[in-house]
Image (tube, rainbow, N blue to C red; front, top):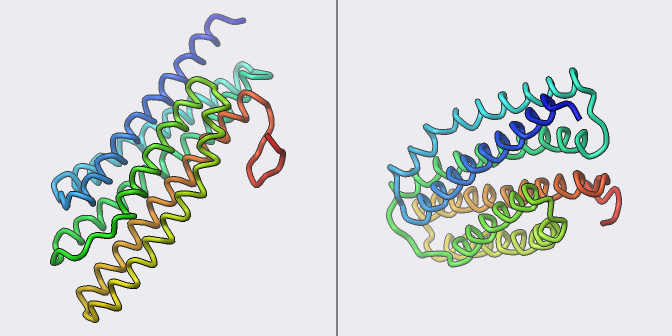
Length: 222
């Protein structure tokens, strides 16, 4: 194998994992901001989003260079293609972190209301899914990837429970403040649930690299 190609392939892996680490930090800060009513932390998430966007462009350019100059095959080709897919999902997770941060600022400015416990559970669920998905890609571990795919239904269930909890609280409070808080909480939960979906995409990318099959939309079993 061409030593230059091998070196650039290793650089690609490092850059993808670096972007994943930045995204993980943004997500964790956003989740802490909304659960802790921390507006300063939320603003850090919003201001740092450009770094994730820049990393996506850098990875894309490297992938295109490797594809154009080296015409890789087999697992190397799948890794490059999967990396291009993965950074799109990472960038979207970064966007959802920004959405959560923006809503957390508005929630923090509103009067304190009843806590919906499922929101914290959903936060922990999607954060864990994301980290496990990244680990599955880094280690090329199909079993970890399967765990993420299986966990997505729990995230969906928790999102529904948050929605029901918000509806119940809004009905009990019967005021504009309660309605606004409920709507914003639902928006936060929806962003969290999307993070779970995107983490599942990353796990599917890991399976694609190792097995050479696409399970997106259940195209093939795994």
